[in-house]
Structures are given as structure tokens and as C-alpha cells.
Image (cartoon, rainbow, N blue to C red; front, side):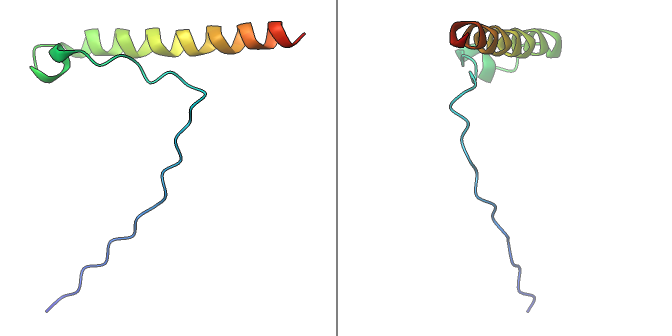
Length: 59
């Protein structure tokens, strides 16, 4: 019998980034890849803006 060993890595949650909103339409498989990509890019843009605002606020 072959022993299978699974190595698990510890997942560190980054609370400094916005993970995005989850919509019911995310699970109905009707969302196109371009729509998903646009939402991901919007969330990244939001993170960059928050980081920029924080840096300006610290000055």
C-alpha cells in the first residue's frame, strides 16, 4: 500500500487588502471571464488607492 503524505502550508491572511465582494452570480457560471477580470482589477485599484491615501495621511 502506498502512503500519501500531504504537506500543508500555513496560510497567512492579509487584512491590509480588500478581498472583493462576493455576489450570488459568481456561483451561477454565467459571469464571463472578462467581467471577473474587470472586478478583480477594480478591487486591486481600490487597494492601491487605499494605500496611497494612507501614505498621504501619514505625511
